[in-house]
Image (cartoon, rainbow, N blue to C red):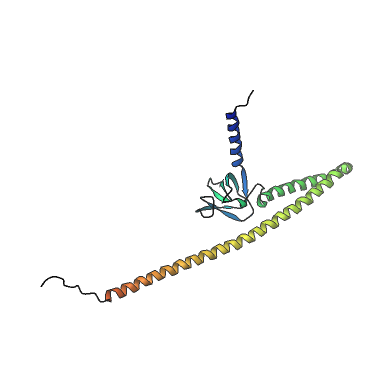
Length: 203
């Protein structure tokens, strides 16, 4: 039995659609701007914070931007380098802490067992201790990374605030210059001598 070509095309299109709408995350890069088109030249329609779960719709290979939909339902384009398949540190930390808590509870439970079963539990206890140590190291690494990101975020926010103040000062100076020029014209023009009209009519 031959496989219908039309059905094959439909299945292929469906698979491509599922791949293009895959779940992705905004990487640990503080936040990134969302544009109305596939480049930074398009209007900024908002920003997406690090760790935000987004849906990847399509990717523009030429511009390096990808179209996404955020949890607020906003559709826009962000730089592809800020999109990752890997869950960011700030989202993985609660899971690591939960696993750590579970491991510690199991470790405590094993430690409280009757001494008669201590030998049979020794191997499991050693494994739990090893797992517990690994989770503690991973948790500390994630905490250090988040702390570093918070420092970078504060620095970036201060930079943005300073830039905004400079732009406001420039507009203020331009506005003041226009007002002064208007006052000057209003004071000088009325006192300027007017040209007399020539009498071109026949006497």
